[in-house]
Length: 291
Ligand code: SAM
Image (cartoon, rainbow, N blue to C red):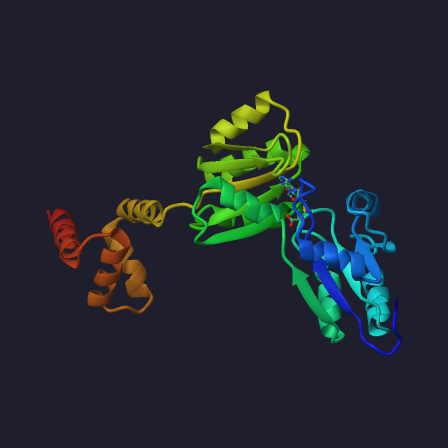
């Protein structure tokens, strides 16, 4: 029952990403007791609610009404209603419109709580076997060409494990784009998590491109890219510097205002050699030029 005096609150409820049993007791209890359930796709959520015999009024809250509907829901919460938000699958706000409603509630001073549960990115990361000590979640890569190129460009030297969501009809294109721009890398392709045909394929990016050229992607996917090792990046940078003329390299720092000794120190660090090596190379170059 909606109360007019008391302020309501928002419950962010994580729901299954495939297997209907993956729902917490707390989420079920909350869904049974709130005044309204706001659902991203009411047809989808009805299946879940029917399965657990939950009969609470549903209202739709999705990408295309997220601002107007959030204002309406905030208004109802200010008038005492308790609202549960469930999105299509998984944890609200993770690559879905939940964040708008959550943000508006905070701004309006409405209490928000999150009931943890399934989330595709965490499920895939734990399954991948790649380092989960430091990771970055990209969600869906941007569709706008320039921003997309920038984001993919940044992945080139990303040392953290990277998690990407992708739709099946874009998978082949994205794998190819990643391979073309960041080179070959270990990837774990996690498909249909928690469902009957769940699978994780760990391979090189090039192998993945070849595999999906032969096999049409079906189902839902999370891509986990292994981060680049710092050592490889450093070795490549050192190699690039080693190919640069040592006098040009020195000039670069001297023109920045470093004195000769400081410039030598910087050049030595860039090339991964000692200051004495830099000094020796400079002398060698000078004597060759004098001859
Ligand atoms: N809020 C959700 C969560 O907590 O993970 C994500 C919603 S986002 C709109 C949907 C994307 O999540 C899919 O395109 C897919 O990349 C990923 N996803 C969701 N369920 C999945 C599953 N069972 N297996 C693999 N990926 C899944």
